[in-house]
Length: 123
Picture 1: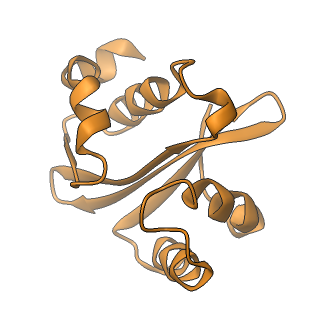
Picture 2 (picture 1 turned 180 degrees about the vertical axis):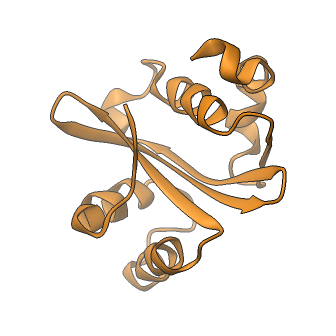
């Protein structure tokens, strides 16, 4: 289940963000979280299964474009399709929007191109 970030999940979100390249430093992690908390154009979502938060996707909104800036899955859950499920749900909650990657998220999003193009049809 893809849920919008809230302040009470800050430590969990920082832990998941730390799996992203370039997000290892605590100061950088805090800056990233602050941006998602304060910038209306930046949105952070966490993926929850059962009682555990195991994934995260962070986006920047710009008109009809949704740029996926962060995409992370707990290493113990990788290879289970969690990342693709997050992208599918993101496409479903942002119908009519074009989902684009950053350099960091491009390799994974290229694997999800069919899901992105299918968007809301795959909910």
